[in-house]
Length: 579
Image 1: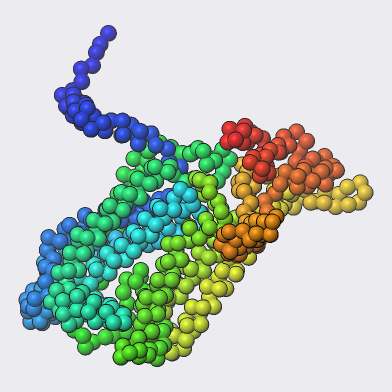
Image 2: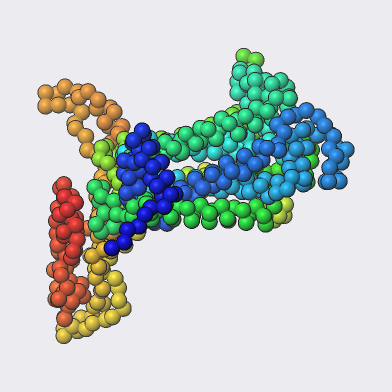
């Protein structure tokens, strides 16, 4: 018999772990967290892309901070970029040129940082849309939805403050637009502009202030909210897509350690590698072509990054005559409406939607199984219409590029986008809702009759029928597992004694909102409907239950909490466990 003596390194690691565990209790936390079960689906990686992009931003940002000079002091450039030699510019722009052409790896890190910022915002938006369309924001995750929304706003602030730092012509034009928007605020606008810029635009204080916001304030808030966001994910357990054996009381997946730790580690390097490849091969924001900020040149093709382009589009679409004077103060609606009202309405609807839907449904239950978007037609249609509005505004922000590339009139393009801003979301809402209802009807047909096989059978009586292939247990469960959501019913306005009930007006309003959400719906198949469909076709020769071979098990019928559910085969045991 032989014994293995632990190595010195192993003993040191064990001693360190024991030391920390006795003083912090970290062992219990690590053990509990490491065995946390997470479901496995590709769409959950969207949030990880956002997280890993942010880590890439932090790594590259630390490098850039070492060489960037956040100062608006004037200097004359003298360096390897000959076209700029002797040109007067700010220290911020000069340090950006030195970082790009003189610091080894500086241009690569600049471009990695910029691409990571674009992917970070794209991943946040895509992740939020996945959460929205699948209903992952429902109880108990409403607060986490708000946390994610605030992260989106902070991402916008981080991006805007970041690409304004080089003090080139493009970023300077964006800051000038910002100054105009701030000044448009009645009464206090001019005072706020002086406060932000430290005097008359552009002043001498803006770049240092933006630098502090960009490298200290906003990243700190994002880090704190990312930690809170992940804490809520662990606290509430992860959502999962519907399927047989999955319910609000379990999670089907793999433990965090070692499965997801290994996956996350490899996925981080994949994301970082893709961003590094983009930074090394795709030029972005070549500030040396624009030159230092000068308020006189404003050229076509001066667009901000894509996530701020909707605001630019709203400003371009608004007619310029919408302003009036009240008590000596000019109220420029041509700036207030596109720059404040339109974004405010769109973002408020997005942030408040979970609470509006909960008000409409009156649902107080916890939800851990996601919705299929087709089963919530109003929500899906509303999300598509909101995205359509943003997409139209993004295109409108590039109306000059569309005009020059396709040789069209910029005035005609602007008017077309003005009409589309109102017509396209309404049409998108209508067509998306129709598609969702059609898909639900298709699900009913499949559950009741099965898949078409193209095989025609003739009866002895001369009747021809097409034999259908029945759904397997898992597919049938997927199509019938959701509970029907109907408009809420309220008590009468007056009780039996003729006394008007308190709170009736609020209940009536809630009922109207609920009807808007759920008046148009397709009910899932009930056990009675399935039994009737099978009985109707039981006379098929050599087959039973819509072409189902006589040896196959017939679907079992069960009822849970008053709602009819179809269970087939082994899923009877699953339904019993779920109850």
